[in-house]
Image (cartoon, rainbow, N blue to C red; front, side):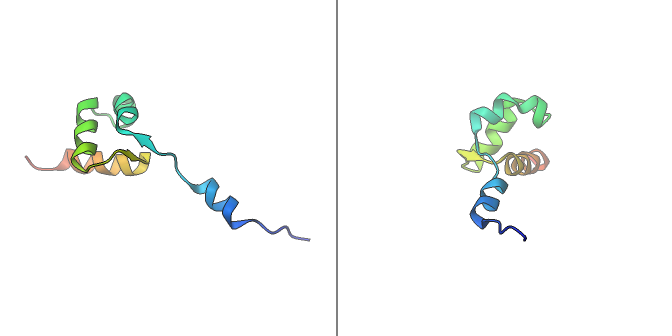
Length: 68
């Protein structure tokens, strides 16, 4: 007989971790290939306090491509 999966358990397993701006800035060179200042500026400009790694990468990349 097939087992039923609990949708709450499945949803919880798919949730991404949240990181603070400071945590992301600390790994900026390895993760974003950018300086901690760039990562901090990009996230603070968007008003981010905590975010997922995927969203942070999107924000930092858009910030780096922005014309000055």
